[in-house]
Structures are given as structure tokens and as C-alpha cells.
Image 1 (tube, rainbow over the protein chains, first blue to last red):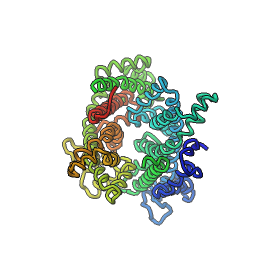
Image 2: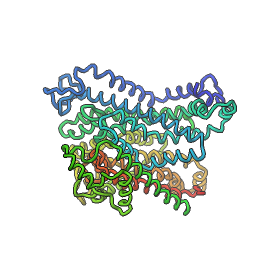
Image 3: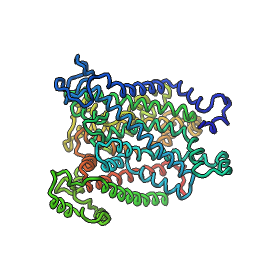
Image 4: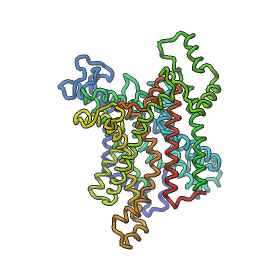
Length: 296
Length: 307
């Protein structure tokens, strides 16, 4: 198992390894457990919920334009100015936001872990140059890089967009992994691997990366809401997902423009976004406490 | 300290240069140009336009010309806002944006630090849980949600402040935008202050201060708070970046005539020089404030040693 080299030597109860311990601690954290249940429920609703409504996300219902929720028709959360069903549109937006958040996190995870582990393990000048790149990108607000990148592609191509967002989200991950790697590379098991003739890549992928997985998981859970936030931010400004597609950000933007007459158009997507973000943050905090008990 | 400061200051210039270079070339790689969507210009006119702005020259030559212009403080003409130079556009909007950001950071420190201190002094009480719970939500709430909600509640329903807009000299237009922008920073600073103050309160020098009979107030204010605020000082750099990012949204939501909207509009319109100008100005501001927060940290913390 991935974490076995780390926890078992020190603990008095070898029956429960590092991961078993962490799982037990996480289960005791009620806020984190509640948050993960909510996340699962919202995800299920986002992917299966639209099927229960008779309306597609981009269809215009000429008879019901800008009707509020609970109006006794089959638009459960009302409609927008164009008569599009807000329940389906919001869930469609949640779907897109979740997908982009997850995929961008995976992209940033892969780049960040490889970048940080390589820099930390090779050390010296290569380390210096690689971390200098990170420093320079750190100096600019993320959003600048994302806005520059978003000009690169046709607007509306959301898959390129999440790649772009993920490609700038790896900086903190690289720093964390590099720090961990620096402390790992002097350990005996690395020496043992070296002595038995494992190559640099083998050591990196088989010995370093599996051992930094704890902090990586913690940070990844905290990265997902950040990525969702970026996507919504860009879509809010009109640089992200384009009509007739919807994401939580673009729905909130439409809602904000109509809030004087159609408050629900703002409240519904904003409610979903805030719930999701809060839950991911609680879960991330819970995981940090569970996987890194020193920090408590 | 002095040599460290000088080295840090000198380090800003190459970083700025690299930022300018990379953004210049990346923006030019984008498909489509600034004159593409103006109702299909005849090719001759488009060629003339491009020649007038020097866009027909090789990219490297454009780059050197841009750098030469920058050295004299000239950001070039805007492609979309005809008759305006980028310098004029930014100079119009920047004062409003700076005012907004400055007030937001000030408010965040003035409220965040006392809240965090209060939470730390009443650790594990209802007050502590209350403040920290609100802080988690405050951090999770993005400004493009808080902004419209505030405009709705305090502008539209309660009518305490104007919903949106700007009249020069009337600060009531700034209240909602500033609070929107400051709220997540307040939450973050409160959390930082609480965490580090709790740590400092357990150290030996605080015990010594208590043992020699100082009042609790003196222990906190004179001894504990100064080292406890160091993380807050080093957070001020990233906070600036956050506030700049947030100001893009807040200026849009509240219809403020700041410079943030130029970055977004520039990106949508492929107005190369306007986007570049904004990146130079906002990037420079970020670097400068990061530098100040680093130097301040070194000055406040005598334990930091420079080699």
C-alpha cells in the first residue's frame, strides 16, 4: 500500500495503519462527514435530476417567462427571462462547474506533483530554475494568467478552459510536494532504492510520489472549490462558459442583472454555489485534521 | 537587512520583465485580432489599420517597440477605444480602483485583527465558534455572490446605500463595494490572527510577562500581539492580489468606473495594448506590495536573519 512505508514503523498499533487511523478520525468529524454527504447528494442531483424534469436546459417556454418558483406549474424553481427552466439550468450549471472543478484539479495535481517532486529530488540548479518559474507565476494574480490564457482559445470551448485553469493552479501543489520531497530524499528507503539500482524516474514515481500523497489529497480537496470558483468567476465576467450553456457563474451573472424583478434567478444558483464551496472547504479542513494530526 | 532589501528590490525588475515578455507573446498567439469583428472590413482597410498600429511588422520588432515605449511610460494607443491612449484610459480608472482597494485592505485589518484576537482570547467559547464559523463562510463566499446580495439587501430593500454607480467625492457609493471586497479578507485575517495568537500565548515570554504581574491587557497588547501579527503582515501581499482580482468583479457589479473592467473588456475585444497595459500596471502593483509586505516582515521580526 502507498502509505505503508510512512506510518507503520512508528505507531504502536500496527493493526490500524496510517489510512485506517485517518479514516477513523475523519468519521468522527461531523462537519466534514455532513459536508461530504451534501456534496454527494448535490452531485447525484446534478447528474440525474434534470432527467425528472420535462424541460431541456436550453428550451424556451413561451407561456412561462420569468415565473417565480412554486407557481403551480412544472417549472419547480421558476424560469428565467427567456422562459428557460431554472431547475434544469441550475443543475446543468452545477454539472459543468463540478466537471471543470474536478478535471482542472486533476490537471493541476499531475503537473504540480511531478514538478515539485522533480525539483525537490534533483535539487541544485534545476531545482532553482524550476522554483523560480513558480515564483514568477506566483507574483501575478492567478486570474491574470487565466484571462490571458482565455484569450488564447475560442470562447465557449470549456474543455480548453479547464485545462487553462488547471495549468495555473498547480503552483501551491508544486511547493508543497517539493518541501515534502526535500525531507524524504535523505531517508533510508530512498538510499536503499538507489543502492539496488533504481533509476531517477523509478525513485520519483515509485517511492517519492506515493509518500507525499497525504498532503496532496488535502490540498486537492481544497483545490476543487478554488477551481469551481475560478470557472464561475470567468463565466461571471463573460470569459468562460457561453450561452446557451450555463455554469453557476454565468447564471449568477444573469441573476444579478435581473434581481430587481426576478430575485430567484440570483438566489437559486448562488445558493448552490455557496453550499458546494462551503462543503468542499469543510471537507478539506476535516481531511487536513484527519491526515495531519500534528496540525490540530 | 539593507543588502537584503536592495537585493529584493533589484529582484523585482527581472520578474517584471519576464511577466511583460511572456504576456506579450502569449496574447499575440491568440487567434483573431482587434479588427476582426468590426463587420468584415475590406482587406485593404484592415491592412491599413494594421499598418497604422504597426501590427504588420514582425512580432519581435513590435516587441522591441513596445518595450521602448514602456521605458518612456507610453503604453501605446488602445485599439478599441479609438482616440484614447491606454495611459489615458488607465489614468482615468486607476484612482477609483486604488481607493477601493486601499479602503478594503484597511477595513479588513481594522476588523479582522480584533475579531481574531477576541476569538483567541475566548478559545472554544461560543464567541470563538461563532466568529470562526462565520469566517469559514466568509472565505467560501465569492465576491460575485456577496456583491449582488449586498446590493439587493442594503441597496434595493433597505435603501441604506446606493445600489450602484459613482459620483466623484460621494463616498457612500463606495461603502457596499468596499465591504464586499473586504469581507473574505476580514475572515482570513481573523483566522490567521486567532491561530498565531493562540500559539504565541503558549510561549515562555508570555508566561514571563504574566509572571512579572503585568495586566492581561498589557500582556496581550504589548507582548503577544506584535509577534502574533507577523503572519498577517506577510498575508498582506497575497491579500493585495486577492483584492485586485476581486475588484474586477466588484467594479462590474457596482458599476464603478475603475480600471478593472478594462482588463476584461480588453481580453474580450483582443485589445492587445489595453490588456498589456493593465497587466503591467496591476502586475507591478502586486509585485510592489509583495515587496513591501516582505520588507515589513523582516523589519518587524528581529529573528529573521539574512545571509
